[in-house]
Length: 261
Image 1 (tube, helix red, strand yellow):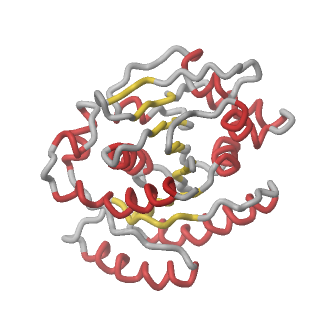
Image 2: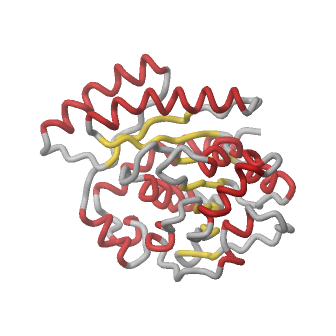
């Protein structure tokens, strides 16, 4: 089955794009094809994937426009990786305003993927840092949701609110089935910081109450920034870096979903 994975967070700077890019590459190493869709007007995927800014007609803004006819424009990245990107564009914020008043505006991305399906095994949607119309579109199109969580008090407290938003919004949209949350992913973990260690110890009880899986933490490392400066994932930049293994469990779970018939 095709898995459409929306990476959601209700704040910026929590590692959504880092998670999406490295998960995409890790899944591709397991011989699966991946499409990354950039719904963020800030176009973080361009930086992480080493892409130049694209003309609006070749971006997700065109996909969400009224006159889209199925001509997906995806840029291949990381030679022979099986990963392609539908790039973002600043005008997608204006498109979001149009979606508010458009019939079936909340379902536009879902409708595009249904009428003009992508051939990839996995579609990863990199969402904006706000729970607005673009994120609603991602939720409506998703088969599953993945949530990165920064190990800070505000982020931990907001995790339950994000789950409630997903449930409430899915009910309002009458999504059947409701896209389950695949899991929480602690991000930018630094074992040398006492607060990080304390919050990481508390997370299992929180996720157990919410009945949501907790994945291993993705550690903090400047090597992620160094890799993104060259537009490649850490797995290609420093293959033996210990943080490369932080994405193994998530990738394995995603591949298992893809294999389900």
